[in-house]
Image (cartoon, rainbow, N blue to C red; front, side, top):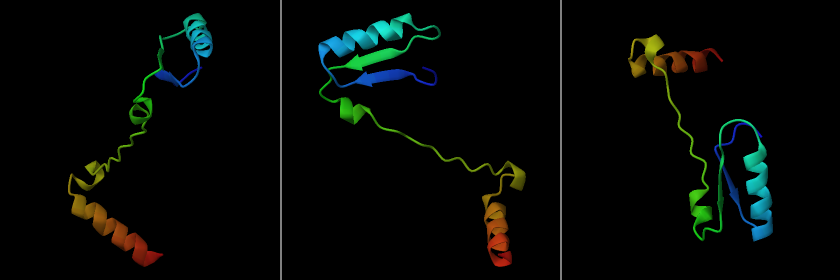
Length: 75
């Protein structure tokens, strides 16, 4: 398993023990295991951030918008 920071498991105690053993046996960074929390669904959210790099426009976001307008007109 790669690319995980945490495992959230909704299951019984036996599955939780098996998951804990599997996580402990793997090589690499430690991965946390969260089980049995009533508020787990609230904690399981994906958050995305969008960043518009205006460096190419010299930091002027209006220049980026002007490029988009030109591109749309050409299409």
